[in-house]
Image (cartoon, rainbow, N blue to C red):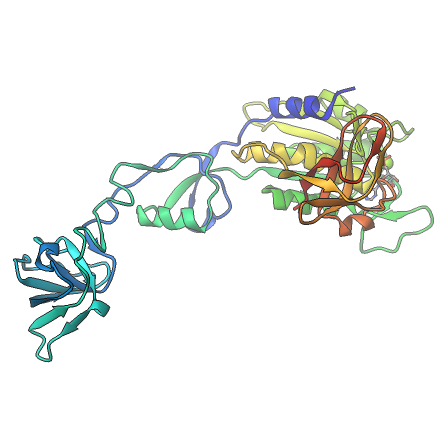
Length: 402
Ligand code: AMP
Ligand code: MG
């Protein structure tokens, strides 16, 4: 059986980033850049003052006191009209261009202006040449690359795009996903289950995981364990980049999903991973044509926690890669076990747990159908595929849940 790493490599081998599309800046937040962005300006466009004060010649203030004649006042948006000569200074505001001849700015707090405004007494220790001046192009110069493809567009990057005059930007098209819960026993979550029935929780779980991971996800109606119904839902799902089916991939008599997928031309890449929970995972590819897109198809095991673990290990990295991001999956770290934990069986195990300040406590989880206990979890504790008792104090890997 494939290991988790082998299965993930196969998923990623079949996943390519979506093409780039142009959008207005107001639609780019949270998206991934698909182009190289260069600056059309020097920033700042001129040597500028970073304080309110007096622009002067540093050499004019050799000791902590000097009296200088005030030439003019320059506020941000204005341009100086006079050069600063020996013995003179220009009143200057933050952001305003440094007048010719000046090489330092002394903060207004370190000066005293005469009552008639004609002269200023500077009380600063000898200013350094360049003091309180931001040089032209210190932040970026015209033609310089300021953002590279693959960058996640946060408010900061959008501000930078505005600074370089962009109104539109090419981003990686957001991946789309359809979710199909399958099972004769399922009813919609707004219904009261009858005898033998349960509510569909995976539909809601999976579309929200996918939305958080950056996909545009929607849930199709529940499919019954019936070939015609499965065919209809699956064909609808082919309009998306990713199709997630939940349930129907194990060894039960009504586990029809792998067969129906193959009948519809989805090429199986693998079925079953040496993983707990989530062993029955099925993955395949529906190849695109010049008029249809390629669809990654995941058959997730029906139990909610198995579905979640498979999503985090395989579907999240696929969404990241489709989105133009590095397919790193959940953030990982190490932590120290607070109590003994028996690892049973020889499957790689991801156990719901609570991670705190460097330590991790496995929760009293009742198995793959127990979603309620997961509500107290903020991570999955990772145990390697060896049967043994992990002792309190041992260091293990944890995957941080979003
Ligand atoms: P299956 O993978 O179809 O054999 O289902 C495994 C288990 O998960 C069964 O107990 C199902 O009732 C349960 N299950 C399947 N689909 C869902 C779902 N959408 N929501 C909650 N539980 C489910
Ligand atoms: Mg089923």
